[in-house]
Amino acid sequence: MSHQEAPRDQLLSILVNDEPRVLTRITALFGRRGYNIKSLSVGSTEHVGVSRMTIVVNGDRGVVEQAIKQLEKLHDVIKIIDHSLEKFVDRELVLVKVAISPETRVEVRQIAEDFRTRIVDVGRHALTFEVTGDEGKITAFIEQMRPFGILETMRTGRIALTRGSNADIASHVYHAGETAALKPAVEGVEAREERARGVPNLF
Image (cartoon, rainbow, N blue to C red; front, side):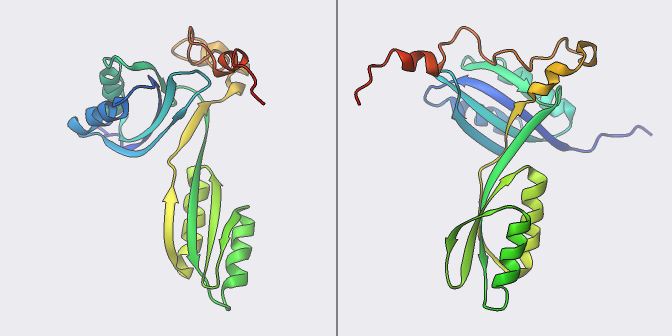
């Protein structure tokens, strides 16, 4: 009997032109094909007119490979980075509002300190924490707070970059050729810093 790979999270970074409706077209592509987007984050990059989308898709390798093929057909997609091919660093931010009482306040704050969180709001009956880290750390913190009573949470979704330390690894390790760790993600596009130098200082 053949062994079927269990679905797991697949992490993609997609560099796109910063144009209206690009996000809609990409999410619609996933929706039409039944791909489940677990997490989605979008932000500007070091290049003017280029945005970076980080998408977490739940599925097997076949799912992510089909998604990449479909995404490459979209006009506004500049580059797709499949983070399963090289080591990467990822982070996520979450705000967690936890119910407290005089009896639990000290214990809640001690657990939060152990996780190196920041308190961003203090009330008589609730504390709000800011937690930054990988998915494992954030999930663990939420589970530790659950018995006290979680009132609200908001997670940003994961963001990721290929590790620069990949450049120290021999190239034969990568089945797709040399590492791209020290290569610009986008070439031929004016960097934000270059454009900024040409803007007169008004202050």
